[in-house]
Image (cartoon, rainbow, N blue to C red; front, side):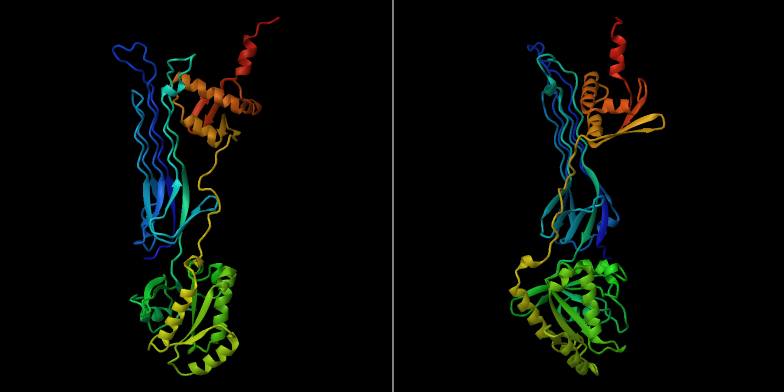
Length: 433
């Protein structure tokens, strides 16, 4: 089964928690804080494996989560960082962020790696919070949450040569005649449902990869028929071999067929018409093909046309040599690759929003929610530190503007707090004149 698109959820491992600990050695009175930091969470990494050809594995597993880091230890010992989670993908995989649609990476070379979800850093132990005023801090920090996102994997076949044309023009027969590939071939009209790849041995020490791509129909650029399932694979090819049926058993005009396919390529991506194209005038062994070929050549102008019969092998060797000569003249980097359109990771800022939902006030914001998750809410000093940070960020003032009063419920992420209005407390504590 050929699977060339998949959407998967990836999450980097959370960082390990820092701990509260103190030195307790026999001859070291009041040794001070010695809580170690947590280890870093594992990254989620995509890695190209040239042995893979489809994305079928992602049909059965769609969620990938890296391991979290180890918690810190006493005596300032850091927790162990987690191993990265490596996911194997086939060459030619384009990775997009599902939410924004931006390209995160284009994986084409064996062993190439792309980090798609960072692991969180480890939380800091109480050693980091020691000051001249507080020499024995009893607070630490939870590990940073790992990044999480949905990504879309889109496979585009990596081939030097792509065979294009209407259904049943003989693309599969041509591929089978010049390679060891065994695509399905029948004596009735049908179209290949998935790309087939084969290596062509030219015979003089040269070779190249040829792909038999599913047949096009009118409107394919808009998704009709196989639509984009076919067209995405043409983008990778360096040379297009356009197979045209010269026998035309149904009375079709070969020139109209050739023009229709090129129009679909243009509507999908105008750059495809800039690719080198050769016409393989197929089925020349059938009656009437020679006359149609003569008229076809007059109308296509300077486009190279090679009369062949994929079934009998007539003219195929000349076509293969011509393709190999063209590839020799083209540097490998002409194969089109997608360019990343933005940073892989989202940048956090201090922006947040406050909304009233029923009896609750809900605060939303990437940094605000992460601060709460990284605060051990069972540690008195840590909670006061969190309150000071939120106050400096303006969260208290925003809640007051929304109408929050003492005792109201405030939700940040998955945590619920009771709002304490510091200004009203200070006013009540001020003696009357």
